[in-house]
Image 1 (spheres, rainbow, N blue to C red):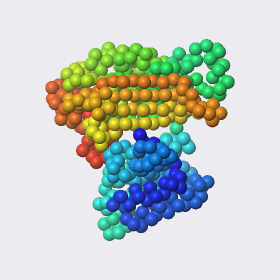
Image 2 (cartoon, helix red, strand yellow):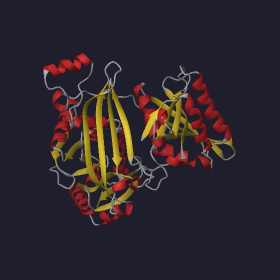
Image 3 (spheres, helix red, strand yellow):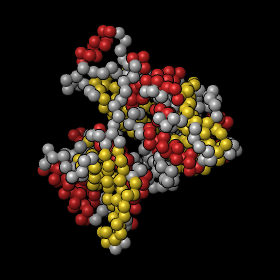
Length: 460
C-alpha cells in the first residue's frame, strides 16, 4: 500500500537514510536538504517549506514503514504565484514505480487548489543528474534556461518550469445523473447533514468523480500533437472508444472539434450525454453504444483513441486484432489511432500494480483502489484486475460513513511490446508509427522515465 502524508519529527532519520542511498546527491546537497527538514520541524506553523512524503507498507504508527520518496516545495518569495520545487528524491527500491510522479501530481494539485501558478525547478547537468533531467522532461516541465558552467566547469544550471492551472469547481451533476437523492425526505436528510448529494451506488457519476484528477485538456493536447507529429491530416473529427464520462471529448469540443463517443455501457452513455449537455458540449458530441470490438455507428474520423487502459478489456490477441481492423475502417487516410495501454512492466513485481488515490469534495472523500493481481497472471499475460471506489462523508469530525461505492472485477490481457507489434502487423491498413512512454510525443517507450505504453497507429 502506498500512502502520502506530511512531515513529522520521526521522519527526519528516514529522509537522511534515503538521501544517503542516492549517489546522485553530494554531501553538501544532502546537508542542505536536511537543513530544510530541520527548519520546517523547528517552525511547524511556517509555510515556507512544504513536504509530501510517500510511504510503502504499514502506516507510520503501526510498525516499520518504508519511505519510498519525498518532495519539498514552497512559494517563491516576492512573487505572486510562483513556487519552487526544492527537492524530490525516490528510494532506489521504488525506481520507475510511479512514486516521483505521484509526488509531483500531489504538489500540482495543491497549487491548483490555491489558484495555480508557475513551478520552477533547478538541477545540474552532470551525469549524476541525468535521471532528473529525463524525469522533468517526462512530466512535461519545460526547459526554460541553461547557465553554462554554473556549478562547475561542465556542470550547467538547468532551469525547468511548468504552469499549473487553477482548479476548476466541479459541476454538480443533475439529480438523474447519479445523485443519491430519491425523495424530498432524502434531500432533507442530506441538507441536515450539511452534505452534497453523493453519487448513487454503481452510478457512472462515481466513476467520473474518481478519475477527475486526470488533466483532460493536457491529454487532448497530447493527442492532437500525436496527430501532427505522426499523422498526415488536420483533426476535424475525433472518436473516443470506451469513452466513459467523455471528459476527453468535452475538452475537444472546447476547441470546436466534432466528437463521437462509443462505450459498451448504456448507463455510461446516458450519463455522458447528460453531463455534456449540462456543461454546454452536447451539440458537439454524438454518442453511441458499442464495445471495443463492435463497430460504432459514426462517420469516419481524423483521430481516434482508447484512453485509460480500457483496451485491456479485450482479453485475446484476436479481439485486439478485431478492434484495430474496426479502427482502421473508421479512420480517414493519414489519420491516427492512439491507444493508452498499461506498461508491460506493471505485470511484474517491480511494476506499478497497486494504486490508491483520494479525491476530496467538501466533507466527502472518494477513495479509489486499483490492483493488477499479478500473482494470478497466466503465461499468456492474462490477469485479473479489481477496482474499488468508495464515497464517504464525515459528520462533525466523526467516523466516515459510506454513501456509495463501486466494486468491479475484470480480466485483462496486457501484451508486451513484441505482442503489440505482432497484432499490429496483422492489420495492413495500419502502421505502428510510434511507441511512447508518457503523454509527451518526445518521450519514447524506451525512456528511463516511461510509465505507460502509448501506441500510435497511422491509417495508410
